[in-house]
Length: 138
Image (cartoon, rainbow, N blue to C red; front, side, top):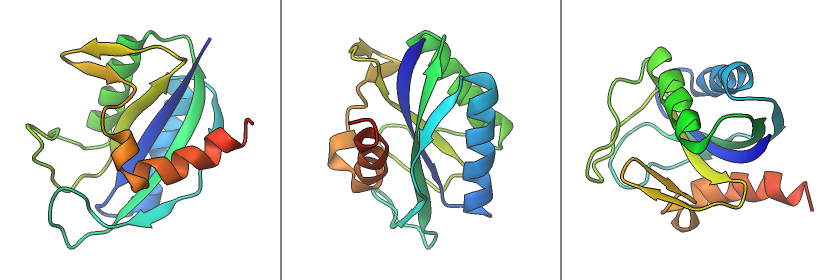
């Protein structure tokens, strides 16, 4: 089993319900959710929106490879109603966003997947929830 850390975010509709549903889907399709951060309300970063985000992080154990994990998390996003991903740094409102932050202690640098997430250290909305659940293990 592999230890993975995922970031979750939503700024449309019932944001908390979307995050709860995403966590449930992760539990079913990715693997056991070992830890989950609190929900954090944050301002949009990288684009203008009148909608605040709710962000969280989860740690789970998975048998999936990094690319299988990417496929499954993208499937969860689509099943929840997300129709388009950000392109070339252009962001937009979203029902759900699931990003792979860390996968064991490996590095992946492929065109479709970069682990650790390349911008996570620049984003408080990722790092604050992530630190919450990483510190629980130390």
